Amino acid sequence: MRKLLLTTSALVAATSLASYAVADVSVSANYEWTYTTASTDDTDTDGDSYGQVAEVTINFSNKTDSGLTVGATWDVSAGAASDEESLFISGGFGRIDLGANDHAGDAYAIDESDVISEDASYTPGSATISTSSSVGLNGDTNKIKYTMPAMGNLTGAVSYQDSGVAGTTDEVSFGARYTMDNITLGYARIEAETASGTKDSESNNYGVSATFGATTVVASAGDHVAAGEDRENIGFGIKQALDGGMHVAFSTFESEDAADRASNLDEKLTASHAEIGYSIAPGLSAFLSYSNFEYENGGNSTSIDDDGTLTKLTIKATF
Image (tube, rainbow, N blue to C red; front, side, top):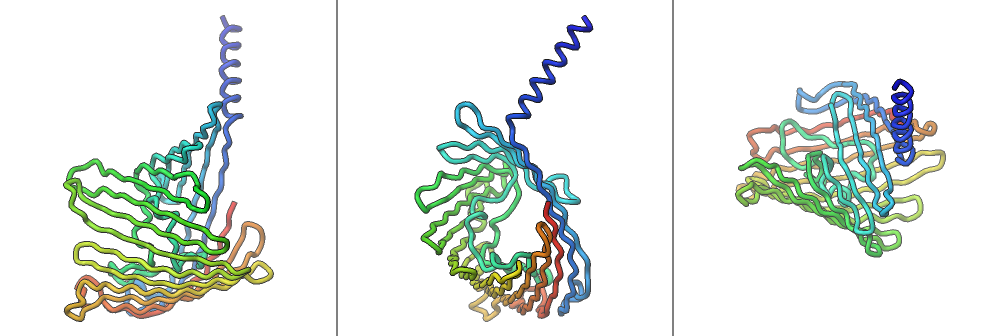
């Protein structure tokens, strides 16, 4: 009996190891340390601060005898039990993702912040103004997403999030990109409505990116309409790669909420960002950014006028 149990256990272990052997598993991680000094009119954000972000991503995939690829992604950020996790099935029909990840439009939006390696956005006070021309397209909530197979130079995806609770918001998002040589056109949209079918909000992003040797240029526009909000966004960015693992980049952005335009009370944010990046060694980079912004609350009683600058140093390690 003992020999039988040992033999059976060995067979089970061998079978398990064989199963793991046919699966591709990859683990990656990154860690960011930041130092930010802010000079703003808002005393809640004015001053110096240190920050850190750590993230680990595990990917599993396995190709079946039928030709389907089945896999999963698990993304964990420091301080959170889980950031993103999803199951995917892909084949000649495209790819289906099931789980918590970004809306479909997020991967297809093109905006001015694409040329800035580190997040340079700033939301003044408690304002609800947009901070990029692709507002509202990210959100790690449970959803179903379908990505179509590439049709020549055209790619696209659509996703649906069902809150499952009466009276709460369901969301539909889709996006597409079309590439012609060195030029890429992008469009992304997200629409939210309550279970009763009442539209809560909608956001659109239109962008174009062009690469000329070591230079990348981006132009974008967007809009966001919701109850009491009618935002119009526009942005521009340029990035230049330099010798020695360096780059310089600049972006500018403007968002205006025209909901109160008839009363001459437009809420408006104008922001510019400059960045220098340097690859110190494989997997280790440093970024120095400078941001200048001007915000007018336009009569919004929940926020205050806020002007200022932010200087940020980031050290990033990837594994």
